[in-house]
Every structure is written in C-alpha cells, then in structure tokens.
Length: 146
Ligand code: ZN
Image (cartoon, rainbow, N blue to C red; front, side):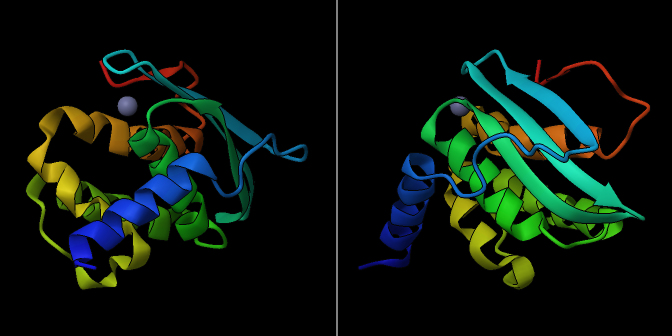
C-alpha cells in the first residue's frame, strides 16, 4: 500500500466513523460552522478551562473530508492549550493549501493531498475555522467559509 492509499484509507475511516462525535453536555463553548459551497455543517463543542481544551466533540454532517477533518482535529486538539491549537491550525492550513508535509503534524498529514483540489480546502479547514471562532468568544456569529 502506498502512503497516498494509506492516507486515503484514514480519511475514509474517520469520515465513516468519526471520533468524538456527538454533543458535549458540559461544554462551555459551542460554535456552528457552515461551508455553503459543499453543504458541510458542523457544531464544535468545547469544555475549555484556563486556556486548555479539556474536552472537544462535534456534531453535524458533510462530505467525507469535512467529517474526517473534524474527527482528526478533535483528536489533535484534545488537552492542548488554545495557543497550541492555533499554531497547529496554522501548520495544518499550510499543509492543505501548499501541500507541504510538516513532520510534526502527526495524523493530520493525511490531508496533504487536499492541496491538489483547491475546492476541498474549505471542507478540510471548516472544523478548524469553527474551532478557532469557538475559542474566541468575541465572535458569536455562525462561521461560514463564504
Ligand atoms: Zn465538503
């Protein structure tokens, strides 16, 4: 199996069986995100305390890439500080727009191929934009990629 096929399998797996899926009852942050171009719609729930993402879950529906990205994002963000999450998003954004593999991205590297399909970048980054807005209480409107 090539690396590309392995990446594809991980995306399909997380798209079909997303991790940390469902409402987070003790969330103190929640944010809706919408990608009208594809029809992806997500809600990110966070239990944040003193700048640490203690728990993160999500609900919603969308294409395999948007759901897989949200699933892998929850795994990556769990237990991290808000600053670490924002730094991770910056590296992830670089990966899906430039296709540059950043070796400390871990499982998130599976989205490297998205850079070849610019229309899919919004699917892959929707969960991250929504998470960023959830961590910034000043922004209360629904996030839209458009
Ligand atoms: Zn999509």
